[in-house]
Length: 166
Ligand code: ADP
Ligand code: MG
Image (cartoon, rainbow, N blue to C red; front, side, top):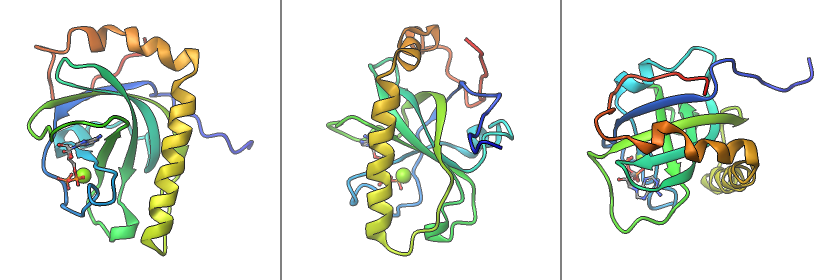
């Protein structure tokens, strides 16, 4: 074991409508997270386990942005439900509830962790964002910006995950 986690189902593409989340005040922390409906979460391949991931995300047919996403149970909040929560690394002028969010999950950052303070949680997320930024600047990640998935998003919308190996 070299400690490196590999996922045969990454890259993983999916698209779904942005729904209201748990109202836990992510936005107040400066890190809003767009939530997916259960149908999208249920379609995740099994090897994509709880943890923090990075990739690209697109609202409707808009520009493609860097993203970090948390998959799992959100232990900090004692959450009982699995969730996929995406923070797009971009400053939006307004919310986009009800819009289609298309994603490609490219890689894994860290496992889910239970933080004993809000401060530590926010600090960890800031670090996740830095790591995602760095990974997504690399050529192998940037290639996905040109992927067909992001070129013709309208009419492809689906709450079912689609898996492509590029
Ligand atoms: P909720 O509990 O409803 O998910 P959040 O505080 O997590 O509330 O805010 C998420 C919402 O914020 C998203 O659904 C979206 O409409 C909006 N939003 C604005 N900017 C971003 C961003 N950069 N990344 C993700 N969501 C954003
Ligand atoms: Mg949220």
